[in-house]
Length: 394
Image (cartoon, rainbow, N blue to C red; front, side, top):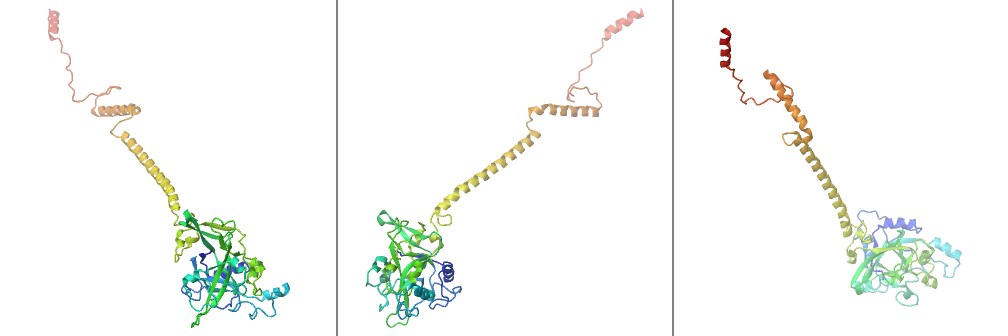
């Protein structure tokens, strides 16, 4: 089943993208705002669609369909004159050129036209999807709609839950087109007017089929996705085909194009939650809530801190070398290879002092301390000198 999808684009954005895919939109179509760029538009506007990344049953969605009366296509509608299902291809082509298409706001969860009163949310949940095989046979609640009231439901993608551990754990996945285009789900629509009420209620359902190979691991059912602007899509919406046929039944097949599917945040599981991150892969770098991104940044920060520490250590080492050099130049320890220079400098200073005091300076001899005791000169032998003088006189 398809129980949740994403459509957060404004109607004007949807219209432009449809036109880019060759799907014309009648600007003057009733029941839809002519211009959606109004700043006052919001989710509470009853006439406007709801924009949500978590689109749930009961929300007002955007539907693309042929512009036919509320009773649907077929005799009596403005598209049909002498047109019949057996008409030639040339006649069908002429009628197709006159067909107009429109966007319309409808509520998800089909309520048949014969309903007398509001069926309640529980009953509506049973008609949000319609199985393709239920349309293969006549009768049933879909019998009055499948021929005359076919539409396309527009979405950016849809959600499906992967069941694990016997269904106890459910991991949401988002599915979208690989090329990024809008998804065109095959659908049916109807309009009802309850007793004693003037308001008309337009509602729709999404047709489902077997899953393709890409989604088999996720679920056994998927929405019928028609290729944008294709001949199959035009056949599905053609108001001239107002009787169900095998050709229309054959259009309800699994999508054969490329899809992209990936796990997303579990927050999408709660109706009412809405965030752009719901359609972003849970392990993506763009997903701010991904805890892996937090840890991925940690090593980079740690390396950055290491570099800072290295820079600080290098700066400290340089400062330490500067301090040692300054210390060696001062009154502290002197390197051995500088001893000769220091002694020569001291000797030069001593010589200068001796010159200032008028003392003779002998090269290579150090001046002794001034307070040292001087030795007495040797005494003359006076007695011997006197004897010699006496002998001479005689």
